[in-house]
Length: 165
Image (tube, rainbow, N blue to C red; front, side, top):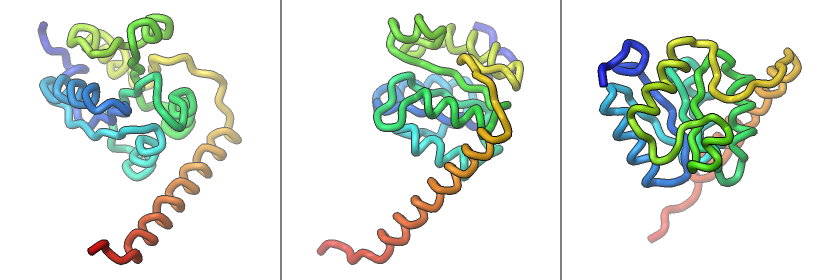
C-alpha cells in the first residue's frame, strides 16, 4: 500500500487500551508507519497524558471497552478538552462495526483508511459528537485540574513512604 502524507511519519500518538497484547500489536503497526506511540492502559491514565502533554498528540486511538472510566466518558472529555484532536475508536468486531470504528486486531488497510479521514482533516472526529458549550469545556478543564491534583498527591505520598526491605 502506498504511504500517504496523512498516515505516515506523523508524530506522537496516544494509544489507550487495557489489553497488553492489543497495545503491543497496535504500537508495532503505528511505529511501522513512522509514528511514535505513548500507551495508557486505562482512560484516566490517557486523560492524564493529554492534560500533561496537551498539544503533543497528532491523534488518539481509544478502545471502546475500557475498565473503570467508560470509553464514552473518555471520548467526551477529550472532545471537550481538545475538540480539534482526531480520535479513532477501536473494538471487537461486533461493537466496532456498530459504532463505525476500527476492528481489533488492527489491520493496516483499515488503519490507513481511518487515519486518512481523521488526520487529513484536523477537526474531524470518527465518533459521534454532541453539542458543546463553554460551561461543558470549563467543567472538563476543572476535572483535569482535579485529576492532576490527585496524581500529584499520590506521588507525594509515594515519595514519603519507606521502601520495603
